[in-house]
Amino acid sequence: MRLRDAETWQQLRGAHVDWLGPWEATLPPDTQPPFVSHRSMVKAMLSRARAGQSLPFVVTWEGAMVGLLTVNGITLGSSRSANLGYWVARTYAGRGIIPTAVALICDHLFEVAQLHRIEIAIRPENERSLRVVEKLGFTEVGLAPSYLHIAGQWRDHRLFQLVVDDVPGRVIDRLAEPQ
Ligand SMILES: CC(C)(COP(=O)(O)OP(=O)(O)OC[C@H]1O[C@@H](n2cnc3c(N)ncnc32)[C@H](O)[C@@H]1OP(=O)(O)O)[C@@H](O)C(=O)NCCC(=O)NCCS
Image 1 (cartoon, rainbow, N blue to C red):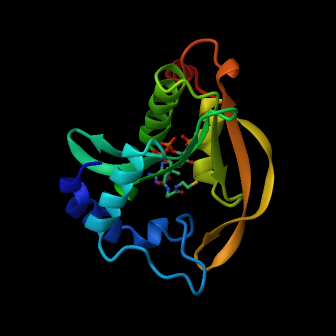
Image 2: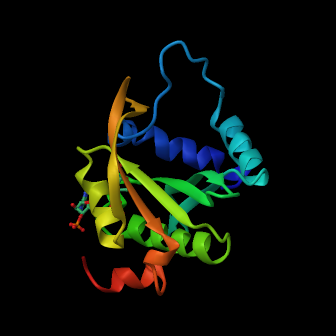
């Protein structure tokens, strides 16, 4: 994500309010929105990235922005972990774009960033996203009740993880064998 991507991101996101609404985190009541514009949101993302806390990636297809993949909560020390959030534009869904992007970022996080564990939290109703972790061989580790505020309520999530020791080769190679 670059500062100059803010306008395209805003347009793409604005066109996908219905598509993302059931799955995208919302602010709990009485929380002041921390940002006034997408540009200030991108500035904050880049600042967190410089601080080593997150990695915001634009997902592209033939040069155009079609989605977002964010590595959040990067923790070093005894944890060496992070969690992922993602979405793709509705018209590009079903082409394996997000499984590919997630696999590539997992390989980067294990090989370059030297992380040990990557987590993805998914609402039980989100069958499309459940397919993403299934295709990549993530392990389910439990149910987190009231895990995240989405569409105005605290929602339960199923938690999935991939630990570096689970992957003898590269995560991207797992996509070659349909799960
Ligand atoms: C979940 C999501 C990221 C999956 O990304 P993707 O790049 O479409 O992933 P895939 O191509 O592997 O498709 C996953 C499943 O979507 C369904 N799908 C297939 N074609 C589709 C289409 N044209 N439109 C919608 N869903 C479709 C299928 O069930 C597919 O599984 P299959 O390959 O076993 O048939 C995407 O659906 C999305 O952005 N959804 C809205 C936001 C969201 O849920 N984010 C994740 C929060 S945890």
